[in-house]
Image (tube, rainbow over all chains, first blue to last red; front, side, top):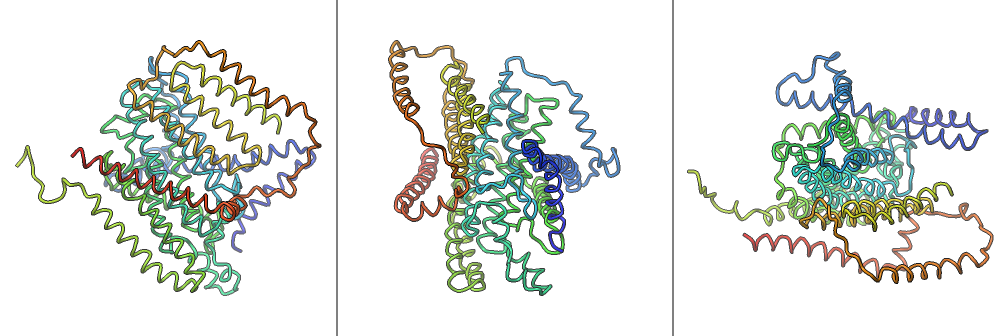
Length: 407
Length: 168
């Protein structure tokens, strides 16, 4: 009875579309509405819930209760925040570029909303089933940079401009390890299509065997994260994804202790809220791509596809909250050096490891490839990481630290 | 289909015209980006989704950012410049470009076109086809380009690291 729920939703959609069979032009509209509107509503709901989750999670880490006044456990807090944001005055700086100041939040929302359309959220369920969906996702994600720069530039504020510059530099740098670590999965799956990448992470001979235990594990053990290159790739991807989504510890563009709030400084009222929504939805989208590429997408035992996807998505988001609560923000030079001198060479090496794994699997079977890959491939990656961190060590840190102005 | 084409074509022409007429450099860059995104939409309309993705990735994501970087490294970051270079010879360039355009377009429109045949039924626009073509007949060129790009990438990292050592 696996994926029963997904198939029912698909059938419901097809039944609703079939009602409009007589009017072909209306049928297209119905198809578009049915494939996009539920997704948008669901992700807006997920956004509202995740703000609550984030505040509660951070509060737990800092040993305080967090929001607990509005509704049970403070669950209605997002609603109260939304009403507050709507009623706030919208202040536009006098010297700002009015048109761009208005357009920037809208432009940031567009790639975020298109991005979630590429996620395969269930068995056969993806809103934009393009053949090159993964590539398209990264392409659309690069438009975020433009919107953030637009916001920073149009505000006519030095902090905003600094934030915009930081955002551009950071997003461009981290896009490279992000895509390079995704390349491994695309190589092994042999496809850029999200659904095919998910099905490459299932073991079909085990799932169709009729043995309950084999069917159970056939849906789990094929995930790319259990392979040496997949594990390393997932870590690189997740780090780069944090930077792409401006999440802590890479939230330099809006570092509130250094440059107030970066590109958000001159935004108020609901425009600020739109920035917030777009940022969270792009964080969800990129976490969804990480789930699709490395964590088996919607595949999993017992439960149907959509619940599995939601569980995995929120688990990744919980890790993001955890990281935000524990790690301090990076310095700008550390940020750039980390992307170019550490993540990128490792991601390139990981592509070679994945290629060797692919041929080893064809030559000697999965078991030997896995064991050899974990010993040699992962070992090579670890050695490279050690060597790189030694090479990149700042000359100031070599030897004993000498204090100039303190004893 | 044709409605979408005309909307996208209008946006593209608008972006192109704005890019050369706007005084503010940053505004001009954003108009160029508008033009690029309209072109990506046109590629998508032609079912060339891979080219559309590459158009967005390379032109909007990289070339546009490069232009913004170049402007950010100058002193006129806010882009407000009222001075523009005027050349007297603009009329000649306008005439030559128009002549070139008409020289291409007029013979094409005037020759009778064969009846349009729908190739959608046996048309496979997948990335797989593209990959197979790149790997079989064009493997050598793809390999050389990949090697060149990797060398460039590593070179950039080496240049950046040695420059920081020189300043210390």
